[in-house]
Length: 444
Image (cartoon, rainbow, N blue to C red; front, side, top):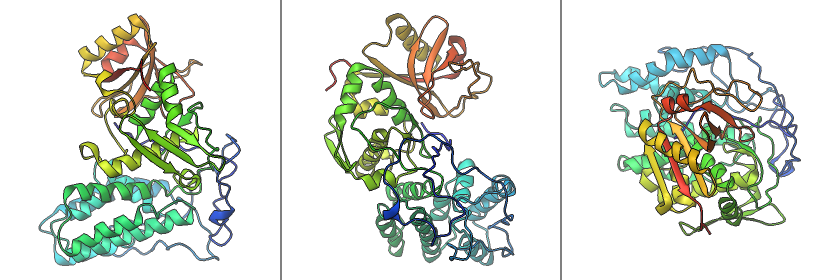
């Protein structure tokens, strides 16, 4: 399960967007952990020059600058309404069709490569996300193009890699955890095409870099305390399946004890995460926690678990998954709990049976995650929060099941776990077609 939500926690610790690279604090000068402030930071502004299509047949009149020098003001990310409209409605499908067209001329192919090289730090993220919104991966389009030469593929991918590195490094986010391996994968074009698993790895690593480009709008995290005891908000990574599972387990006595046992911290804020069910332990440094703003905000111990789980996926690639971006509603229970005590259902009949079981027996000793597939229209649901305010629901997304009664199903959205959502049972069963439930009794 995945979604495209961009949930950001904003604090006073964020670096002001008007600072130039020389003025911005160095990495060592930035506090690794914040003070828990929930104040909002730099407001979004829709201004600045319109960036022409980077994929026009003609060379753009305006070439976006690379990382600016000390005299040039900077805004990261750079975004205008015109830019969004152009990328979503025209540019994205145009370039994809160009890359996919076997009859494309050599001259136009060269033009495509030149235009890809015009991608810069200020339109980097939105180019990638525009492709994603059309169901296309920019890197996959480049790697699978039938008419780009090996050299052209390498040139395009290396340019995207260099811009991503500069953008992440400028915002004091990590790039050294993925860049070396990405360079090695790109070099494989020199001898042969990448196999599909390595293509997935490269695409996943690019997505990680892209999700770290909102570098100036995420505050420093709170210091972890070795307990899953706070609320959190999903970040720019589609790991709702994991966060919903963690939240669900934390609502039970046994699950909370298991989670707390999984995370150990030291006085410096470094964490050690152990997944006993799969026999894996990972060391997460304070720098790792600070420099992973693509992940959740709030309870930093949850972020530590995200980082550790992502490393596990990078090592094992279970079921072909290259990272934690997207998975099934049951996967968190299978990896964190007991897969033999986990059951899943798909379709209205199966989901209704599980909800009736929850309604009649309660949630004691149970954890559950539900969701709806991406082809379901979530609109029109009477979903409300505790204040009676209407809440937007999302397809292709996982939710924690908090409980159910004769009239309502109660859910928690990993976008913000501080609130409970109430949905009429009939509407829930009409829209939600996935559910997983696990028995947490006896978890250690």
